[in-house]
Each structure stands twice: as C-alpha cells, then as structure tokens.
Image 1 (tube, rainbow, N blue to C red):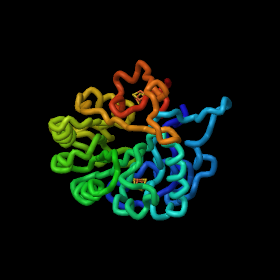
Image 2 (image 1 turned 60 degrees about the vertical axis):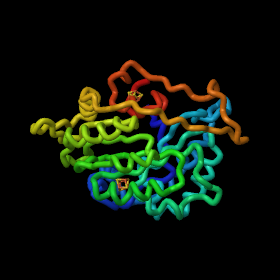
Image 3 (image 1 turned 180 degrees about the vertical axis):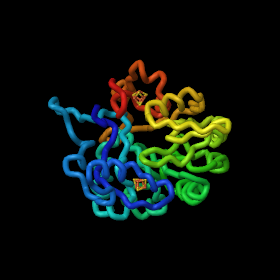
Image 4 (image 1 turned 135 degrees about the vertical axis):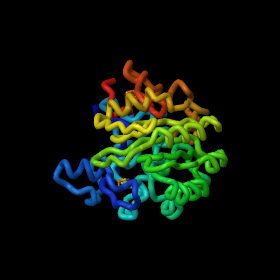
Length: 293
Ligand code: SF4
Ligand code: SF4
C-alpha cells in the first residue's frame, strides 16, 4: 500500500556518521540504478500534506502522524533553500503531527522558522544515535533545543548505549531501537536492547524494539535473520517493547483552537497488528507501509 504516513519534500542525503554506512536511501536508490547522494526537491510530493481528496477534504486527517524526510534528513544543509516552505506547510497543518528524524541536531537552531517560540505543538523531534559516542554528542543538543516533544531513535544499534541520565531530564517521550539492514549486518546484541528497555521502563518511557536487524546476538548465539518480517516477529516475541506514559499532542486547528477529540483521526489496526513490533509506535493502518489494512 502507499506510504500514507510519509512526507518526503526532498530526497537524497549526505552520509555523516557510522550509522549512515549502510543507509537504506542509498541502498534503494542503487537498486533503481540511481545514487542516494543525488539530492533533489520532490515535485508533487513536496506539498503532499496539503493535498485533498475529491470531496475537498485533506488526505491527511486531523490528528494523524506523518514522518518527514524518510528518504533524506530534514536538517540537511543541501536542503536549506527548501526548508522554509516545508515549515510553512507544517504551520498550515497545525492539526497534523509531523515526526522529524535527524542525525544533525547541531544544525536545528539555525534552521527554525522566526515564529518558532518555544516550539510548535504539532512537531515531534527525534534524533538518531547509533552508538554511545553519537548519543553523547547529539542528545545534549536535543535536550537544549526548544521542542515540545522529543524522542530518540537508536538505529541501527551498533553498540551498547546508556541513556539513563538523558532520560532523567524528563524531556524524552519515546525511545525506539533496532538492528541493521540494507546490505549491512553489523550485529545487534539482545543485551543492549534489554539495557535500554530497563532504562526506559524504570522511568515509564515508551520503548519500542522495532526489529532485530540481520545479525542478532542472543545468549552468545548469532542468528542471521534476513527476512524483515521475521525480524519484526522476533522483536515482538522478545517482549522487549514497553508502553510507558503516552505522548499527548495538543493539536490546534487553523484558528489556534483545540480540536475536539471526535474530530481527530482514530487509529485503526488490522489483525496482524497484534503481533507487530511497530504497534507501540504505530498510528494505525493509515500510516503503515507493510500492512494490508
Ligand atoms: S542521515 Fe540518514 S538518510 Fe542521510 S545518509 Fe545518514 S542514514 Fe542516510
Ligand atoms: S498498521 Fe499494524 S502491521 Fe502496520 S506497522 Fe502498524 S501495527 Fe504494524
């Protein structure tokens, strides 16, 4: 099905750290005979959050969450000329949650729009850290930034990462982690995942173990799991995910007024969702790229 929950205003990226080594954007582009280093503004995709269906309603409903720049990095320097227009779209759709994911938190402050203030209610900023070094570089930057909702993506998880002292800030609402794929198979250890889960659970923060990655080490044994669905299943069965305090986004309509609950999108889930490792993060079949619903 269509990736209803993704908005890619630009495509292509520049590798900037260890986690980029086997970047899936490069992997997918190579399959198509292209290069992930070819960075361009998308044509019809750029204004996707403003597109409407035949009845004139927005295709993305109030209260939905969409992930931004899943085939790039929202704070990429090469995209500086396009970002203001992307912020305009997010300002207009104050009724939709935009999930930003970046490895470049050091660039964020200079890239914020002038009316940012202490942060918009509809933006959920997530920083990716693949090892302790990157966590220690990027998480302090994340904590110093004016965003109302913050999360961490520890993927591909390349080593043990301790985040407890950062979680103690009370600012991190959600943590996700997963092993490596897309031509890469640096191992992910179950013990690293377990430690993260324990740190999150102790603070009642939602933790999602998304997938094992291709090479997964548990109890001293190495498992090679090439099939992504199987990785998902194994991650789910490990029981490592933890539902903590829910994130409550205070979305407003175009007049700046709160949106009544009955007017907000209600997530739908299919049967298969019950055993899906993404369930804990997922906004339902409307946004899923792998479910039939
Ligand atoms: S920042 Fe993300 S999209 Fe960009 S090269 Fe690295 S892994 Fe790929
Ligand atoms: S809609 Fe269901 S199957 Fe798809 S990612 Fe979400 S929980 Fe998983």
